[in-house]
Image (tube, rainbow, N blue to C red):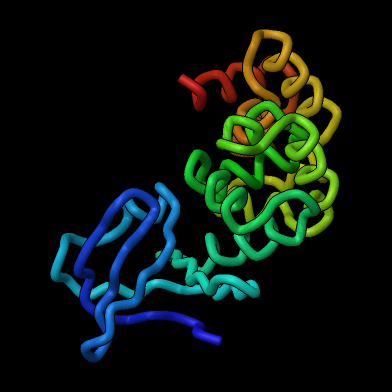
Length: 196
């Protein structure tokens, strides 16, 4: 299979890029997130790729980062989420936000993707929850893994959800301040500052 394509970016259209490699133009399906990270036309680009082969078609999906490619591969293992659905999810969410949504069981956030309904979003959460970690979701050294948050942190997350914030958003903010503050009130204040 093709692991990556490195060449000159010749054309960008919605959900598609053409990369010329030694005189051959590769048509690569891309997410909106990848599209915004691409260089200008006629610049060199490297896209990490996944090739999907069906009996009637062969598609190449490309991503600027390996992280996005790995999440794409995880998403297509979920029953009901094909390459198009996985690309849709990665078009409306960053890999980091997707991880937080899965860890926080925030199906509402995932179902914002085109073609992904409530049941499919719940299936994504159920199938992938054990395959990702909070350390992957928040790469700052000061954050604590969501699985290890204490009772004060859990109370702060619940308070933020009660205030109307999404579960993923609340978990993300509390994870960023976890370990620095000891009581629920201090954690809540610090988390709210992160969210503003």
